[in-house]
Amino acid sequence: MAKLPRSDHRSARHPERIEFARDQRTHANEFASDVWQIVRGRRVLGQKFRREYPVPPYTVDFVCLELMLVIEVDGKDHLTDEGQLHDEERDRFLRDRGFIVHRIPGYRVLQDAMSVRCEIEETVRATINRKSGSSD
Image (tube, rainbow, N blue to C red; front, side, top):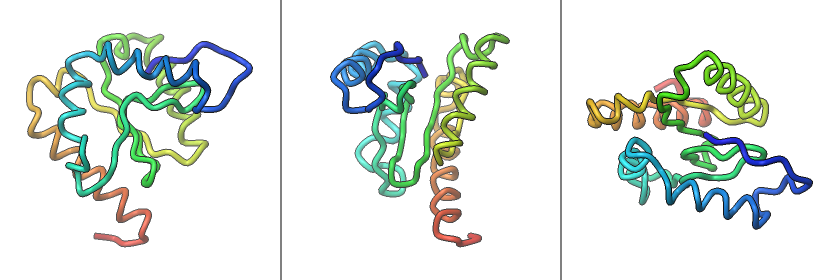
């Protein structure tokens, strides 16, 4: 998830943030494109996901706003010490705002897309259960 440039505008609806998110979608890596094919069009338990969605000052890879669930697909930059520290800061920021963050290493998407699909479905199912108070 890329960090947006700082500005006086904190709203996700600000034109600069929308343009940034569009640019991220246009230049998405292969991992993100493959995950988008898994989650788009309510393909995961009927839940609507948005792609490259601004949550100022960040842009998340995928989000289901109804469940407050963020899915991040991590490329090689996330494996560095600096990348991991940045991810921890970003995840803390998102959790403080009520989001659940689920990370998937990008290489897994290419190696075994079916298990990634199952992992995403299980995460969505667990989130639905947690939100509804169910223990299924």
